[in-house]
Length: 146
Image: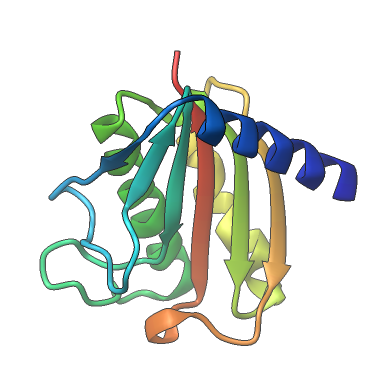
């Protein structure tokens, strides 16, 4: 795990040093709720900020529990990827943060639907003490543009 993380970090640092960064912003995903961008492109890598299950319109958590939040977070990631000329097929790494690790199977059931017919990216899933806005799930992603 540490070897993978260090490899991604090295790749990330190389990409950042090799090309200027480009900010990605789309109205099809929630605007940032803090001082960050929806995504940054550095070289051929797209770093998507962590997404929770916020509805882009009212910027409130979708009702329905972890499944609904997972679906909305992944939909938000899809919108950001599209704005960066990418798709779920371009994801290379995903990190999942769960408020309760017992939601792992429920999250996976939703997550898998976004990768039907394509190889899913490398992934880690962790339980955390708390997430912004009381969310039950947050998803962070890195893609490679072709």
